[in-house]
Amino acid sequence: MDDKDLGADLAGVLIPEDRLQAKIRELAATVDADYDGRDLLLVGVLKGAVMVMADLARALHSPVSMDWMAVSSYGSGTKSSGVVRILKDLEADITDRHVLIVEDIIDSGLTLSWLVSNLQSRNPASLEICALLRKPEAVQTEIDVRYVGFDIPNEFVVGYGLDYDEKYRNLPFVGTLAPHVYGGRA
Ligand code: XMP
Ligand code: MG
Image (cartoon, rainbow, N blue to C red):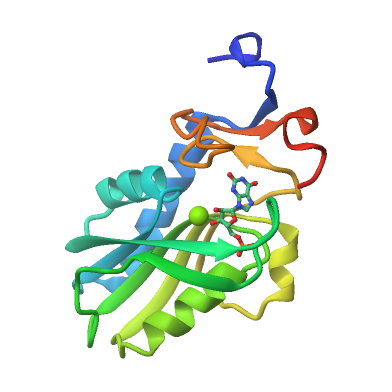
């Protein structure tokens, strides 16, 4: 898909499909090297992480299981507040397991820092984070993200799992949303 096929809601392509896929392969190689054949539980955060989870899992050689959590972060508009509610909990008992949280994007980092303390309290053997995208505001939260795909500007992005009003998740690339769609706020 090129620019002229984009809907009027999209401002442009930020990360094209080939760069996304190359980065996923690179992240997978690092994860493989780090876990060195140990059993790994990938925890995907619904729904945004579906694409990165599916591609990362297939690029890994380590033995993995996959589980999912859905959380909702109370907040106004596009900003999260850090007050999080579990909509769907894990099915797996993560006690003594190596857990890797797979996320689409870190903005303020509040959602993820809540998730980390929640999962940490279940006593996993290890707990790390892999996030495909990271926005500049994330530096304000003290959260150790071991694997990051791309640092991106503070713009609202969609595609490759990320949505605006549940649309655009199926785009194979990451695009920027035109400000007129979300009222100019990132
Ligand atoms: P925090 O601020 O807690 O929020 O790190 C992370 C969650 O906010 C959503 N988010 C976005 N979703 N395009 C999206 O489609 C964006 O640019 C964007 N920025 C933040 C997302 O659900 C993420 O998990
Ligand atoms: Mg998300």
